[in-house]
Image 1 (cartoon, rainbow, N blue to C red):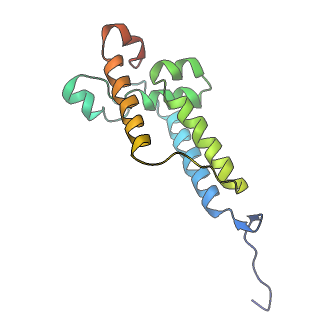
Image 2 (image 1 turned 90 degrees about the vertical axis):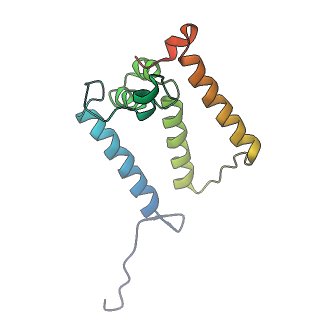
Image 3 (image 1 turned 180 degrees about the horizontal axis):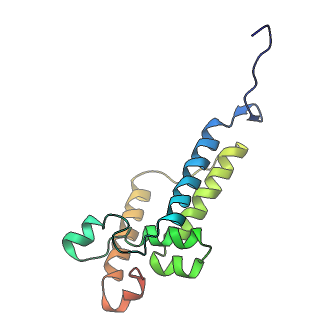
Length: 138
């Protein structure tokens, strides 16, 4: 290359290839959800857990919630799956930390995993009961 080195875009001496790739994949997923509406029956495959048991799993309504977020409708997103908006916010914040080079220390270990499992199981049970049916996908 005649003594000329090619430069990669970098922030604080680090390559941005990973963060840009992740951002592009996330934006592409949201673009697909803007084009192909999961509120339309048959637009996507049904949840296997719901198809077999008739019960709502913790992820049921997630595509509809992400679609609603892609259309900037937070209320509809929360009514489809209350976990998706906070999860997307956490993913964006984690991505921003990644780009800026900040490290985020999260609790690790079996206690954290157990807590996540308990919350998801409790959410699943509650959204499938009469008094928690407001948590079922709309």
